[in-house]
Image (cartoon, rainbow, N blue to C red; front, side, top):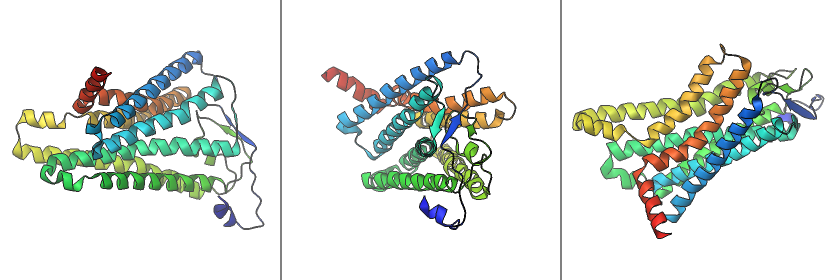
Length: 312
């Protein structure tokens, strides 16, 4: 962080607040029921992702490159939910809306890191699916444990560095207008808009990062399935094409991207309270539904669950 501040010069004094005030759910009627629902989603997410991670660890047959990504997705979902939901409940349910400056940036870092990793995990699964269908004879050569580990580690490094840059740019801003963040967490966009000095670098990063971690992954995933569909039209029947494209991965993609796209589309025409609730649910639902979908739709995991239950 000091690297960013040194670029400002020694004669410039930054105005940093002692705390930010998170005010996202203030004034929403009967919001206590939403908090109960949020807690329910978190408990389900916690249990379901723990079960998926445990199944992958217990069954040697699932220790394949593909399930390296599935394990990482379950870990990210578990970690992301634990970073977001308990803090949201603490802020709003237990009336602790004041969050220290450094804690707010840390909160933002973990939330954005986990959200971004969900999208990149889906990219890794899409690539695995592409190679498995288009180049089945080369799958064992192209998709190895070393390759998947390297891919996941590179995704983590990219996301961590990107979010650290975003957080570092916030530390060069002065806040002399307001400290009220109208969101359910320490939202990067809400924070830099409160600054009273030049926030252009933060604005640029707020435009660039969604392109890199949301739109480009979505375009890549759509391209892979269009290519798979095109390739299958030449070598298979309609039934075989439908069977090949009917996968849990497509369900995960829909669950993650559709709520985001819908929330961004309707955000300008709905009430601010409804916007905050919809964006919050967009962050919570995928980590809860992902493991359930994998257990219900993935044959290998269903077989593994039956095997583990039978042994126990």
